[in-house]
Structure formats: structure tokens, C-alpha cells
Amino acid sequence: MYRPPTSPNSMNRTYYMLPPTTLTMGDHYQIKPLSVIEVEKIGKAGIRGEQSQSTTGSRKSYSAFPVEIATMCAELFMRDAEVVCDPFAGWGERHLACANEGISYIGFDLSPEAIDYAKTTYGVDNILGDSRCVDVPNHDGLVTCPPYWKLERYDNDGGLDKLSNWESFLIEYELILTRFAAKANPEATYCITTGDWRSQGIYYDLTYQTAKIMEKLGFTRWDSVIFTRVKKVNYNIMLPQVKRLGYTVKLHETLNVWKKA
Ligand SMILES: C[S@@+](CC[C@H](N)C(=O)[O-])C[C@H]1O[C@@H](n2cnc3c(N)ncnc32)[C@H](O)[C@@H]1O
Image 1 (cartoon, rainbow, N blue to C red):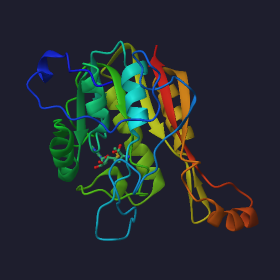
Image 2 (image 1 turned 120 degrees about the vertical axis):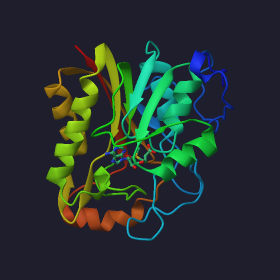
Image 3 (image 1 turned 90 degrees about the vertical axis):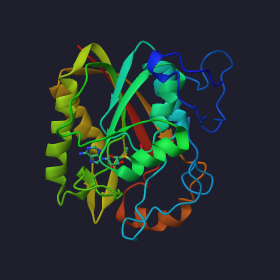
Image 4 (image 1 turned 45 degrees about the vertical axis):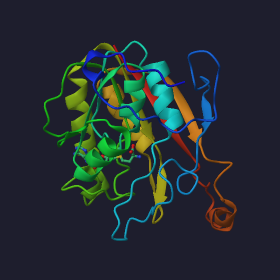
């Protein structure tokens, strides 16, 4: 259920509700704390309506950040946090979910289009900036969805999605997580969603790479939640090819939760 914001710096805003989720628990939590969650489909049935997922067309494409996962992060993993950061703020669903719980959220994004979208759609103010060099505030939580390298191209100048190779992407991704972790208070909780994918015969293991970075930064695993669109995606058309090549259709992403020692 929507609750008015309680943090002092959010009292004067107009608030917008995220679309209702289908997973309602009854008491405070809208989302059942389960380790596997079926989220809404991206596209027509998704929260942003029909939109292109093309990385080659002229339209810049964004995947929807699942409302269910934004809500779970805010209600469950960030429940003790006062200040939450996001180095890749995207279109604003995580900001809105945190604001609805009375949590101060400070999100940075390099895309003016994303900043505008968050403002006009959800009434939230994210900060235009490059997370490789912004001033990171002290915080006790982080909720983010990094670019999955160049799977999507965003409307920004020089973002991580524009880097020409995977190795450079990982170096700059680690640099950003390192800068933010340096300002994380003891026992801060970090929620980072990741997916793995295949392209031209190469398996891109962003989930594992993120875990390696977080362990190097002194965080320990607290939880992980698999989110899927198994019931809503027509994967049958992909089966002949993956059976021939000997691998699986990727239908899940992971919400990875760490705590700083
Ligand atoms: C958060 S995702 C966007 C789609 C996503 N599923 C979401 O949560 O909305 C990636 C975002 O990272 C931003 N980005 C990429 N490199 C960045 C950088 N160096 N600093 C800040 N934002 C960056 C992109 O502009 C994009 O909005």
C-alpha cells in the first residue's frame, strides 16, 4: 500500500505511485520475501508500455526496472537505511520505491533523458552526473542496476554502455563500485541487480564479476533473489537453437545483496 513520504526533504514533492504489483502479502510488505520472484514482462504488459529493446535503432532503449524488485529492496533490504545511493539511477523506479518508504535516495545518471523521465513520470529528482567522478555522499545503502555493458544503449555521453570492450567496461564498473563503497558506512547494505547473457558465442558473466568486485571491497553476501519472466516470455522459439548449441535460454536476473563488514 502507498504510504506518504516521511523524510523531511521529501515533504514538498508531488508523489506518483508505481503501478500496483500482483504480489501482496497483507501487512507492511507488498512483496513476499521469497528467493524467486516472477516479475512483469518488459514491453506491452510492462510498466513502461510498449517500447523498443533494439540496440541498433535510432530510439535509445531502456529496459524496465521491475517494480517488484524496487519495492522489495526498499521495504526489506533497505528498511534500516536512512540514505541510499544509486550510481546508475535510470528512470526512477528505485527512487520512488525508496521515497515511498521515507528513505532519502541520491541517484546519479549520465543521461539527461533518464533524469527528465524520472522527474516527469515519478516526480523524483535524480542528479545528472558521471559516477566515475561525482561527489559520493556517506550512505548506509545502495540500490542499483548497472548497464549490462552494451546490451542497451542509453541517451548519454560516454557512459559505460559506450565502452568498446568488455575488459574496459569491467575496469570502469569496478572503479565506480570502489568509489561508492569508500563512502559506505559500516554494515551498509548493497543491492545490485545483474544478469548474464550470451553474444556471438561469448558468455558474459556479470553476476560473477560483480561478486568478485564486492568481495574484494570487503562485502559479504547477505542474500540473493532470482527474478524471472518465465511465464511471460515465449522462449519456445529459441529452444531449437539452444538445444543445438548445448546451452540454456537465459530467463532470469539476480538481485544480489551484500553487507559491508
Ligand atoms: C540503470 S540502467 C537503465 C535501465 C535499467 N534497467 C533501470 O534500472 O532503469 C543504466 C543507466 O546507467 C547510466 N550510466 C551509464 N554509465 C554511467 C556513468 N558513468 N555514470 C552515471 N550513469 C551512467 C545510463 O545512462 C543508464 O541510465
